Image 1 (spheres, rainbow, N blue to C red):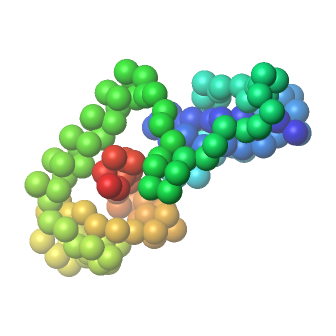
Image 2: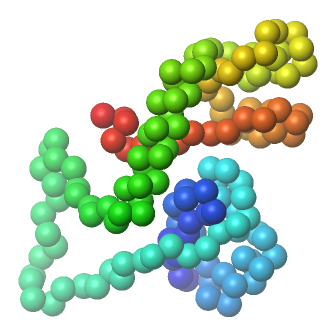
Length: 150
């Protein structure tokens, strides 16, 4: 089995296991590998860091102490993408009405002319968002960045 780090055209990262590299190639060509966030089949391999065991130590590095988080270095393209996503989120929050969990219902009301046309944002499950798109209602998921969760 091979584990690949994958990324979709929208920049969503995820992992998947394949029996072989040929199996990965076949599934990608047939459009069978899709992003779990946005469901696109435009997926490719992400930069992967090999997991190399160290032989100069007799034990694994200590886990972070309680309250400490592991640290990673973010490359400039990802930093720029995060800044754009953060700016988009701030623009939406400043210029649209927050409707919370009523988002799917209110989006339908606006789409079908039962409510005043306006920009809204709120929460929807992936299944609710997919159903809206299938009805022809334009919606977009704006991911919450790790820094925004703090």
